[in-house]
Length: 454
Image 1: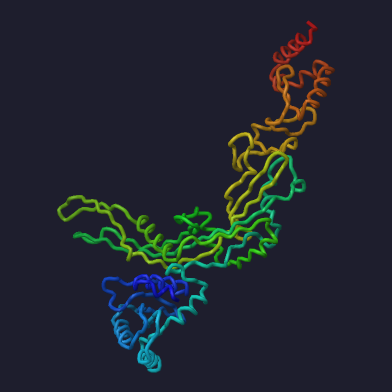
Image 2: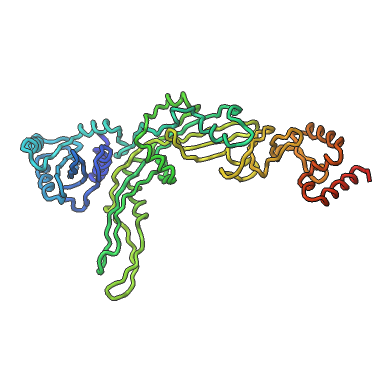
């Protein structure tokens, strides 16, 4: 705990607020620093269905004596809370014998406001218990839990096979095994309450009573709030996490990467408070006593926002790449067991244009490996199979362009076409021949002219 010795008293309170939150206490917040009346941190716990308030005195000193414990006992008695209350004194140093005797006597006498004492050694044990380490005087997040990177009941490449299933002209059995990688990305799920009342001479003009929950990427740099569907994936699966065992997952994926949390608990808490301040700031229009209309910007104070929990977890980002002849198709998603949110779908995207999405029909070109939309797929004339416009060899026969896999197929069809009777040549241009009798006659005459017959 040597690092704690370098903290200011306020910084020590920040650390303890994070520690208590990680221990599972609820509604953890700090008292007003200008006049805390002996109360540095206030929080709540539920024991046997009863909610109880806990008033914490943080002492960043070498020794804590009996007067500190007595002062806290008085502060508990005057604290406004509808329910049972108890106290706690936390120090980086140690307690004197009179201080411990006083706290023990409260317990033995079944005092309605007992006080628990935690010294520096207790803090070290707590830090080990909740998996936290001290980093630059604050709590660094050390997390070893992750959402499941794959469905244990299916093959790891099952999502890729499923994505290819509605691509025409290719079967799952023909697909090569994709290269698979997983990146464990740190995220934090933040739950916070905002309670604020805004009044003027005419009374209350605006209230905020809101509980907000959001998820943010927690790597280096400024935290970024994830999309709503990703946030839902995280929050709905927090109860089903597994240990992040890189060696074990290395047996399933070709590559495994684990990223580190970029900031401390305190920094994420401060960022969340600032974000909620901005989110809840609004301009309210009201009419004063003089019947004049006023505009007032209502911005909640930092003390109006209480961060209830910061839950760290790793979010697996899985990436598969499938090589099909000349092309590579990426498929990337965030995973939580069988559930996933697609981040990139390179399978349902035409290689020749920007067309993408599930509403389009995509077809595989076995000639070059391209997956193309309906505008860039044609039927190969000689073999009757799909071919993309990017690799096709073309030539016009009468009034219509034909598509071929290669020059050899083109030459073979040219010879076949030369030997066709006129009515069969006409049928090679069905889009004209089927229009009308006049169009058909004109087409046949055109073919006769081209053939030098008339």
